Image: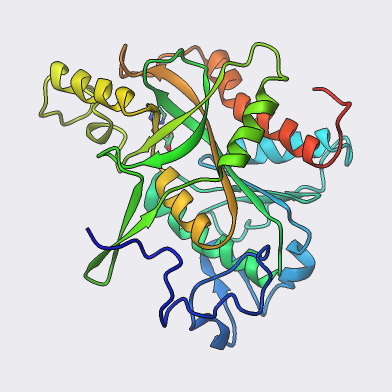
Length: 320
Ligand code: R2B
Ligand code: URA
């Protein structure tokens, strides 16, 4: 295996954070500083067309999640929870000029959709991290909120990821760069995970645990499902794989956490992954929850993050 590229000094990383304090969001690309203009194409934003420091300089919390509707709902919910105004009518999609991703800002909270899977979240993260860098944001916490399949835990449980692992149960993200595979670490911020877990204890009837999260390139064969258009393994093999995953400390499966952990870690963002489980993969493959149950489950990560942000901002006595 190639060495991790982490913070190893070299021509491509050396000195790039020199002018910035530890707490600034940093990019690790020597070419960026020489760009006359940086167009964040998939976000429909740019350094010449938008005053990024004015628009985003006060951002302290970034929440990302797959679905545009969910991330809009989260922004409106946060807006209300922060007591900014009742209607939230002034909350508009900042990326309305593109239908790739959506983005909403309320106070110091930014809410962005990332679509499904590693390639989709990776494109969004490149542009988001550059955005936070151009806007000179500092002390930023970033959290992915999403859904997942549980392993050996009750549906509706919220899993806070301590380490994101790949399909081989390894804490790594392998990125093909030119014709090399570069292996990056997928460690997440342990203190942040603990802080979120402590927060969850204050919400009644809110089953939460800390565990490893497995990130796959596919929802069907990649997660050992027997119900895709293709399946070339037996039920026994599937269960053997998922039980080994459980014994390795994996409690849920989703499709973005490894690249999210790797990219945020390299760029100085304190990052967490909080996903609700929709089913127990030791029991079934299909998601057959009633609509209202699904909606309630999907709100759980949002509820936890709103509690966490309010606590960080000093809204201690309020409950929701
Ligand atoms: C969780 O849910 C999506 C697949 O249904 C995927 O984006 C993920 O990580
Ligand atoms: N998301 C996933 O990636 N897998 C599941 O089983 C459920 C949601």
